Image (cartoon, rainbow, N blue to C red; front, side, top):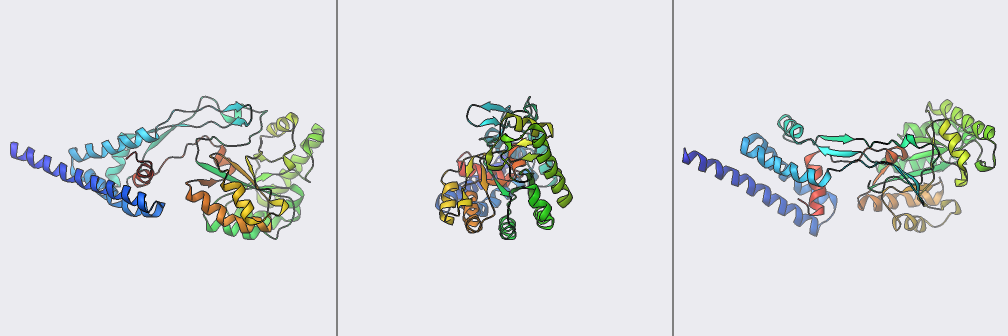
Length: 349
C-alpha cells in the first residue's frame, strides 16, 4: 500500500514539474520576445500538460483546479452600475464575472485538447437603458476596447478601401450615415452592412440639431432611419449628432425613438486632411480604454488606418463596434490557453 502511494506522489510531481517548466518557458518568451504570437507559441505545451493532468486522475484534477483558481482570482469581478460623470456624462456599466470551476472541470473532460473556460456574467442592478437624457462620450474604462465611429455625409470614393482595411485586420467599426447620403447611395450603404459593420444615424442632411424644434428633430431622425432601413434593412439604435451639436431635447427625442446619443472621446480631425502620421499620433498617443474614435472617409484616413489599427492591437486593444463597447458584457478569455497568455504577460501565473 505504501509503495502505491509513493508511486502516485512521484507521478504527481512529474506533472507538476512539466507545468512549472512550461510556465518558465512562457515567461522567458514573454520577456525576450514580448509579442502575443511568441508567447502563444510556448503556451500550448502548458495546455497539453494540463490536459494530460485532466486525463490522469483525482490528483491531476486537483492540479488543474489550482490553475483555474489562479485564473478566477485574476478575472473574477463584481458588477459595476452605469453612472453619470461630471465630464464624460453617461458611463456604461459592466457585468460581474465568475469563473465556474466545476463546470470548467466538467468541460475539460469533454475537450482536454483545448479546455474551454465557463464564465458566468452577472448583470449590474441598473441598465444603461434606465438613463434616457444623457449622451455617451465613451465606454467603460475597465474594458480594454476602443470603437471606431465613421461619420459618412459625403462621397463614396474611400469607403471600399476603408472596408477592405477593416476586414483584412479583423476589425468591426460603426458607420453613422447621413440619411440623404444613404438615399443617394443605397448600394454603398448595403456594402457596409455586408462587410459586417454596424450602422448608426447621422441625421438626414447634417443640421445643427440643437437649433431645431422637436418636430424637426423627429423628422430628421425618422427620415434617416427610413432611408437606412430601405437601403440596408437595419433598424437603428445609435445616433451621432452632426458636428457634435446637441442639447437635452435632442437626447430626449432620440431616446424616445429608442436611440442612444453618441459623441466621441478622441477626434482624428481627419476632415481637415492632415498627414496620416498626424492622425495616427492623435489617436495612438491618447489611446485609452473605452475610447470612441471619430473618423470620416477621407484619403488621409485610408492611409492612417492600417498603422493605427496595428499600434492599438499591439498594445492589447480590441477594436469593436460602438454597441459592443457600450455593452455591459465584460470581455473574458474563452479558453485556458487564452487566459494563460494574459496571466503570463501580467506575471500572475
